[in-house]
Structures are given as C-alpha cells and as structure tokens.
Image (cartoon, rainbow, N blue to C red; front, side, top):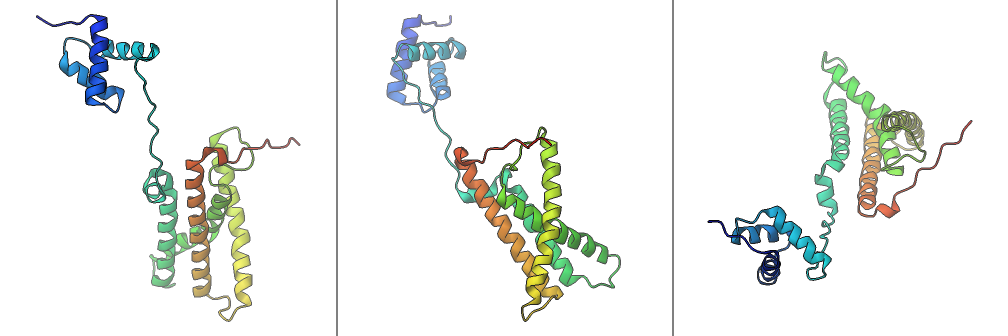
Length: 218
C-alpha cells in the first residue's frame, strides 16, 4: 500500500528537508523529498514548493551562472573564430617559407593560403577588433550582417596591406617577402587578440555592448 501525505504534512517535510539537508537547487530538494516518499510525484512536490514560496515560508534564490575567465572563454565555442584565424595565419606563414615557387602542385596550397592571408585576415581581424559583436549600422537580416562583414574585411585588407608595404619601404628591411610576411602576421594576430579580449569583456558586461544605429535613407 502506497503512502501518501496530506498537503500540510508535505509542506512540513519540505521545510524540514530544506533545513536539515540544505539542498542547493529546487531539483535537489524535489529529489530528496521524492526519495523519502516515492508515492508522491515530483510535480506535486514542486507545486508544494511554489506554494511555500508564495506564502513566504521558503525563499528560492536565483543562482547566477559563474562568470568565465578569459582562459575559459578562449576554450569556448565563442572564441572558435580566434583559433581558426590563428591556424590559418600559421598555415599561411609555413606555406610561404616551406613551399617553393616551382613545387607543383603544392604551390597552389601556398597561393590559396597566401590569398587568404593577404586579402582576408588583416581586414577581418581589424573589423573584428573595432566591432567585436555588432557592426555600427543596423541590418535587417543576420545573413546580410555576415555579407557586410565579409565585404568590409576584404576592403580593409586591401587598405592595410599597401600601408604595411609603404611603411616597410622606409625601413632597412625594405619590401621583401620575409619582412612583409612577418609584419602582416604580427598585425593580424595583434588585431585578433584585441578582438577576442574585447569580445570577452562585452560578453561579461552586456551593458557595454554598442547599440546599432539606423542606416540613413538615401
């Protein structure tokens, strides 16, 4: 014969269990009471807990998730773009120095990675550092936001790479393969690191996120 409890007795059991076993969550409290009286469904126990809360006899505290530190953030999926950028940069640098011009068909890998390294990564990381979460203008569609970020990345790469070459022209190293490759690597990784740090800071403080402004009508 199953054992059932009147509602008032169930409330007393819940209060006693809370005081003696000090469960950290409602699920734990429900499980502990259910273990004592298996005949009572978990739904009934949860309803009794809510009634006790409404009566002011039981205070349920909202448990806030712990804020991840920078290392944890870098290990999360949110920072996957950073590691992909790092891997592409490293692969491009290795291909530049390890694959000779006359090595076919491996040289095509060098061309592809070199194109990404010059035409995409510098501008992408620069835009990501300036606008880590949102672009400064409102788009009506998420896909459109991605397209605009891609276009801006190519445009900024075409602007940044000649500037790097111009500055190197006035240095003792000159415009040569090794100085250009190393300087673009340093530039890309610096922008990427700044971007992921800003993204981490904004994820922990949503109030600091920039607000989109409406694009003017022409």
